[in-house]
Length: 149
Image (cartoon, rainbow, N blue to C red; front, side):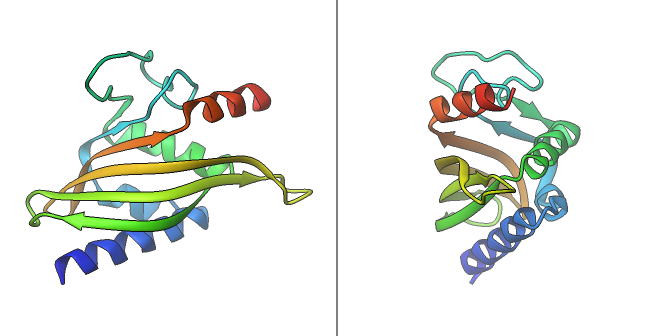
């Protein structure tokens, strides 16, 4: 039942994000939550330079930086389509794998101006997201940066 509730809550949070409201996603995040966003692009380097290494490089830390990332996501008109959510572990050590695709459309033509595949790994402790690691084609992210700069 717990895993079902986590999946349902995440779907609701992403639906609201797609509607332009990031508040539920942000309320789910712990005050010191971390986001790991890959690559050398403007999304990954909003606050810190890109670093390469074995470990996931934390690109956003804390409520203010997560809010800036979420606000930009909404402002850019990005949308997530969740394909699958897998939840494992107890409430004090919940792990989530989320497979989706994200996209942005031209407001005039309705055609995709950006599309990518996403796999995200989330860590949740007692209902609060402590870490989100995002994995997608970073070349597509960089190309979109170049096209919109």
